[in-house]
Amino acid sequence: MHKKVVLTLTSLLCFQLAKAGVADNPIRSTNSWGLYNEQRGDAISHQFANAKVVTRRDTGDDQTKVQLDKIDSFTQWITRAPIRNDCFFVTCAVLLGTTPEDISQRTGLPIPPESRPGEGRGVSIDEMIQALTRLGIRFRTWSFRRGSNRGVSEALALPPRGLPRVVGVAYRRPDGTGHVVIARNPGTEHRRYIDYQASPSGRDVTEDVRMSRIFAYIHVDIDASSGEFFTTQRPMIERMEIDYGEQDLEPMEVDEGEPDRIFDDQLQQLRRGEFNRLPCAAFIAFWALSKNNHHKRLLPSQGLRPRAITDCDKARYLETQLSLEDKPPCSKIKDLEFGFKLSEDLTAGTYDRIGAILEGPAGKAEFTIADDPPRGFSTRIPVDLKSSFGSDAIAINGINAISLTAESWRSHLIPNDEWKVEGIKLHAKCVKPGFEISDNRLISLNAWFQHPDASWVPFTSSDKKIVRKLKIAPTDWDVSPLCVFIKNLKYSFKLGDDWFSGADGPLSFKIGESKQIIIGKDLPTESSRSAYIDLKKVFGKDIVDIRDIKSLELFDQARSKKAKRDEWLLQGIQFEAICADDDKGMALKKFGNKHQWFGKHPQANGAVFRGEIVPSDWKEMKLNPYHY
Image (cartoon, rainbow, N blue to C red; front, side):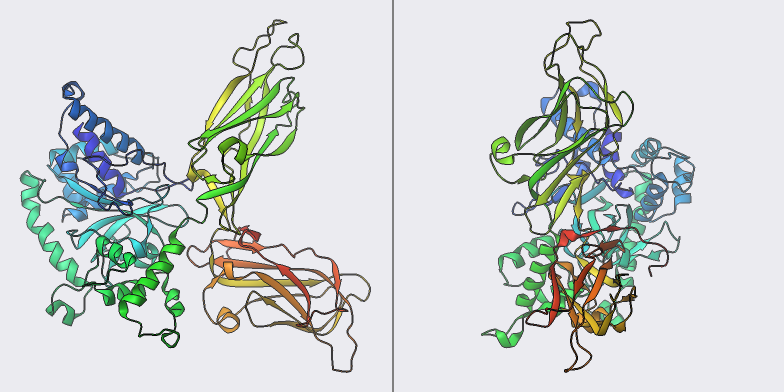
């Protein structure tokens, strides 16, 4: 049992999260994992050193048995994420003030070679945990939990009071991969993140972490650890607090003592507007270096306020912007559709009536997909949320299972046959305007199904039964668009190839609130133009929020005031963007194949075309190595 307790902690020390994410934590509030802050409920303190160490045969004590069950439940949750043994080994050594070689020598375990998640090369995680248990080491963690265990953005991952100045930090990058590194001075503007796996002397990965989401802080529990090894290492651990904690400070700051540090409970005060004795200047300094520092330009103008803006006003405003951005863009859905397709295999069709059941905490929707569908059959069925779930919108975690059903419907003479499903897809609109969401995890299912009571004996066909129940999780859904902030934007424009489809005079466009962008002048038939847009020049900022890009306008100017406007044929115009946070690509191809004549009848503002844009119009695009 003790082994499982330590596993729960050390599993956090290094992990790689698949893009599907992490499953929901079944533990909500217990004596071992009590909610530290009741207002938000997103941070939990884990004090595993207080857990009673017993074996399964010692569970006669009901209270102990409940505690064991809860620890097991949490262990199962966290260990669903693949763990890299090499990363575990290195991080533990640094937190203990020693080297992987020293840990290896003391435990007799070889240092695991560098590996990928799930490869299991070298010594196993179980063997490492047993060795650490024998060394008498205990850890404490402070974990962040929001929505479907998304963690929190680095800018909002404030530590609890009493957290050491040198800790481990487990985080997930925007591309879904995760890592653990050493955090120095968390909660201050001087915080740094150092990766000792990448380099024995430590590599600064602060920028990487600031673009990521933090799951937990981890540190050695000085009060609960014991044994000869811990006694030997304790001076090094305590000295590390001083040496590493001061390493990132300016000399003057070291002389003046520990820098201003902000904590999770103070963040709650700031949100409530309780400014008394709050270090508001420290909040502003803390967020100045975050990945969201473009919000600083959005601070309200002092000239528009009846009183002077204080540091606390600024800090609260910045926190509001960060929290709005940090919220999942799609926590509730509407207009749900169920997509279904049978395989093209020769015998993939069926004589059965097949149906589906969508169910979960929100309720249950049951409907027929098709009667005796042939191979290759496909359909998209709107799900009536109001009649099935009692509301036009439900939470993203309101459906957690899809069941497929089969029954005889035409004649009991025909037995229930097999049928092959190529894929299933759920698609919905987010309640938040402009966002859409899809569950594509089962889109390549390619599996055979048959009624559980099927028999080839005539007159033995059966009533409706579930043939397979498929689990789905909130982390299975993919939101469109991939991101809302972009740092790079490129346009591609092309004229048609019909007779006289060229354009006289200059053509230009505006996208969102940009300035007019010149495409070219006197463009002949089949002309094409492609160029990167200077965001700073046309938008006035380096980072653009695509939620502010709500339209595209095309402008056509005559050669001169006396010249007549000519018509020209637009083949299409499309855009490519790179996300500010994770370098993923998106494309706006909504106007990429217009094949439409323009020029004769401009609008009042001189535009010859105006098209509306919503965030969901931006679709994922694979980048090639030359995009930069």
